[in-house]
Length: 473
Ligand code: BG6
Image (cartoon, rainbow, N blue to C red):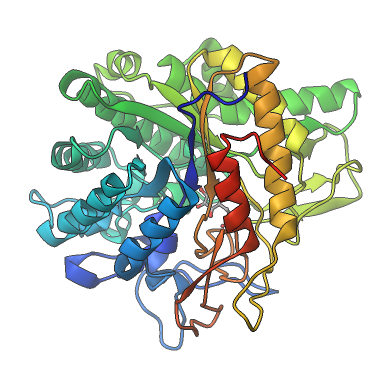
């Protein structure tokens, strides 16, 4: 018993937060390339062109573009079986609507995947991790425009064919539900349209992403039977604030707002429940003939999700709420949990609840594609970094994963903890919010050598992987 012998241990990153090289070799900008970092009093600002005096942390990020061989070597040293990364869409199609891809961009990922192969590391590739080409947002209003389905499909055709012998595991979109959190710009590249409700824009854009995902899955199943196609749900998962019936209702409703997205990608249709949600929001979806068949044919092979925290949901008026970082949401505090420095409430046991919920609901293999502790690490003078708090966080989650496999029969096939090598925070644009096993010397102002240093958690995770999850001390 315990973790299956072929369990996929590894780590996760995303091009826009990690890769850098933001205009090298013909790459076009993505939404995040002109996003500022948040400060104590301001949120990230998304610019559409460079503004004088502004600093954009994602442009260099932690420079995987020039450190890929070193970084994959470090992953191999830890014993990684899998490396989750994304392909930067505008590195392949700089504007997004071209007919021909950018060859130097493709060559970069040839090198990356060859390097993984050298060490027997399986890439797990997110096709779009909040990386809509900026041009598509400015000229098409992002995913609100149906044309993006075709652009995305062309992009998939190119990368599937190019990497068919090097990549087996794919995720069609990162955190597909996050388009419905706050502003759909980050996950959908779309802005307000006069006279159209934000819900209409959001759910129409999501429909286009569902169709695009289904087309990609169908293409893979027909032409590349060796591929495993997955979906990714963002970890906005709720607990009832109390056992009051109204809190239970809020708990169910808040979780359903997320399940709406995984239901579609795992089951392939708009259920009566989904249609009721759209009706309640006043959304009238525009569908094309054949969409329903496509959605049914494009069900994923496995489900993945990020898990950092749980959030309390309440159906009653609250006086004491905290701000949920990066979401614009407020929630009552869970008195039984502690929170990270950024206010995420840490709940390892909750992971078991959601693993069971997803497995019961979909009956397909699960993979945790993000989890981890964003913390203020200190690099000592001798270049060590003593991150026992991270080890403790990860250990508690891995123990729960094991229990879900052993005692509940959940088919969990892998674990890629977030930001395995330090990268820029998506929510805040900060460098100081670090998740990695490897410290990268860069600060919030862009200073630093970009040198890599192994943290204590690096040696710990190596032991975890070598023992297939048995040695967690
Ligand atoms: C997930 C995203 O929501 O959370 C990642 O897929 C992100 O892109 C991660 O980095 C952690 O969030 P943050 O805001 O701490 O970087």
